Image (tube, rainbow, N blue to C red; front, top):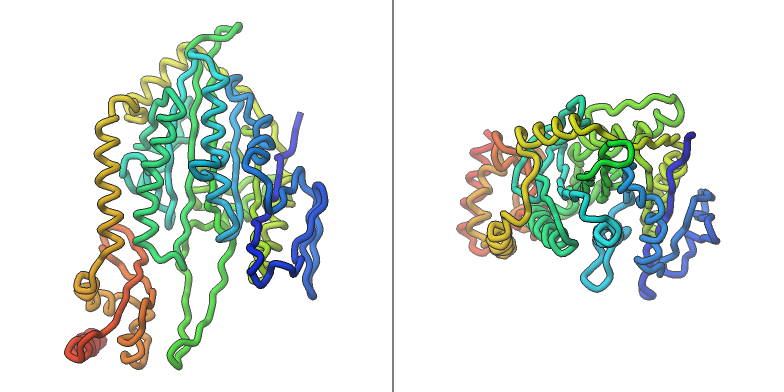
Length: 441
């Protein structure tokens, strides 16, 4: 029997002093939401519409009935999808006083499960089609498929967790690494995808002599489509061209193709490869679409509503994943050989040391001085296409906090950094101009 995904919409609350506060671009009643302005109107119905002041507990109560079969071998995938600044991070993590859905799911698992289960936790980041392990500093991981194991990430560290507190410490560790990298990258063009995986395996057979194996995937930071923008600064037109980030459009196209044509094309996106089993209907599917009701976000909200409406038409036929003792042993052997599992308690001291290192690195990153940045200017000027096309360097020399991309290391990966170019002495200005002219000859 086929079922449909559960789809909910959550609206971000605006402050009273926000210019869009009383414009009523988004209205809702029960499970119906309406977007309208002078030119466009869209009205759709979903399983649930959460207003601006809905508590976190209500969001969790919506998804809870859909994930409670993890102890019976049924997997679930939760997507938190929305534009920038629409409350995705708060919905996912919350804060220390008001937990989001990830900590609440973890607490629920340990409240319900018996000691006959093993719970493993991992957390990855996808940026520019490169997969990073947020719990072990591994980078450029690859996606593979094993007949008895399914789709997996080769080299990914999974921690065995035995309490919610252990999981929350791992989340804090991952967030520190994430914040460090976010600070290094330009927030205007960078967009991450974060995937949390909770694998649950029974250690005792059921009445049929089989073992349950399930997974809960929680995905957030799925950016809406960004438009190319033209700005006029210092008398010149600068065209900011966004690089290919995480090919979120590939996910949208995959969902459209699955619903309309009946076949799933994952394309060349890492995200859609990891979601292949979920989109094929093997997992219970939940989508939480987050909307920012500001006037400037109207058309992005329009697109997100359309995507959510298509997403709810996916046909899901979940299956119970039960494995024999022989297959269970084969999987354990496979995991040991590929070093997939890492026991949490063996790394308590390593974890504390990592936290100190990451915090120090974040502090150092926030206090980069001018001289360190200035040493990279010559290299930047050679490799940055925007800088090369500027006719008059004086406007750049005098610019404060002008952001652009450059290749930090051709053998590593491209990062976008914010470079503050300001001359404090006339000699610096002359020296910089001379180097720029020589690099463009």
